[in-house]
Image (cartoon, rainbow, N blue to C red; front, side, top):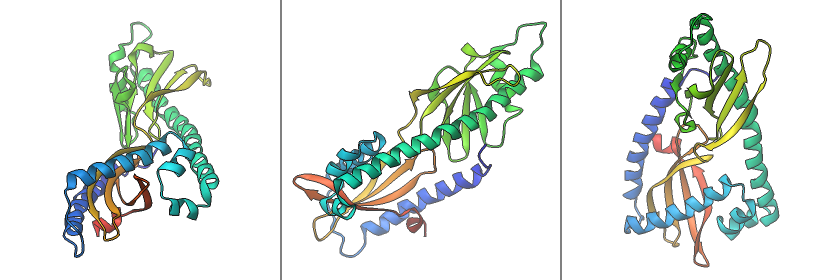
Length: 270
């Protein structure tokens, strides 16, 4: 399972969020920053950044390169063919890497439920399914929280804090079904036999969970002297802790596109 540093990570996330608010206030009052109506510019930025990440989430490299980034950035990246290939490869690599890692994590979770059932169930009487999650808690690794339910959306992973879900409809002494959110945001359903030495079963995508890049929200914007729009954006990549990004957006042919972007989480916290 993942290392047990959930308290530290969650504390840092809170501090970073607080520092980001303070940093945004300093940014808004910086010399040379034109004050504009925030609602209009924030709406523009939210749409542009939302489109930017939607193309990445969906693995639509060609559309991303043609519609989400500026011509200067596209040219610097080697043109639309190289750009689209890089985006498509990136998304596929993330999904390929997330699946086997999730299976490894789910096997550990499986044993928590199996050990709980094995320790509390008796062959002489029915085994109450509503207690499986409670029993699994006794064998849980640090940072793992267990719930009971049939809704995949109950499962979540944020940093090192994991909420795993055991489905009572298809769980018993002989078969265990659970839900787990992988590092790319997808929630998987794993069903395995408890027969010793057997991994007979299946792992499927439930099509639940957040997109790979989620919780995208424009915190503040300001215009620069050349007419471009700088946006400070909070977001989360996969199941990692939230970060803050700075985008510079330019208007090309009536469409706002990203010209540059950078992670400013640490800078805002300084």
